[in-house]
Length: 199
Image (spheres, rainbow, N blue to C red):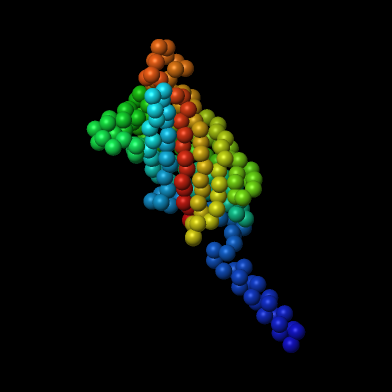
C-alpha cells in the first residue's frame, strides 16, 4: 500500500512538472508578438513635453531556465506617432517633423535596432540589461533596468531606456550645440518605455 502511494506521488509530480506553462524550459528562443508589443516615447522641452508610440517590427529573446541570455529587436521608425496632441493638424506636423532629417530621418533610416548582450538577474524578475542600440546608423552602448514575467501564455518584458539623442546625430533644438534657443530648447535626453510580449 505504501509502495502504491509512493508511485502515485511520483506520477503526480511528473505530471505537474511536464504540464505546459508551469515552468520554463531549459532553453526558450522566444519570438516577438509584434501586434501586442509597443514602445512609448517621451520627449521634453523647456515649455513642456510630448509623448507617443513606436511599433516594434520584430524581435527574439533567448532564455535559459527562465533567465535572459540575449536578445535583439527591430523598431519601425516610420511608425512614430504622437498621442498627447488632440489637434489633428498639430499632431501631423509634429509626427512629420520627428520623421524628418531634423530628427530621425526615417526615409533614410527606417529601422532602429536594439541588442541585449548581457543581463544580470536581480530580484522579483528584474534585470540589469546591457546592450547596444542603433539609431540613424549609429550604434552606442546602453544600460537600463528591465522586468520579465509570465503573462498568460506569453512572456512580458517591460523597462525604461533613457537615451541622449545627440549621440545619434539628432541635434535639432539642442542646447548642447546651439546658443540662444531660449524656450525653444528641446532636452537631449528622451525616454523609451518598453512594452514587449514574446511567445
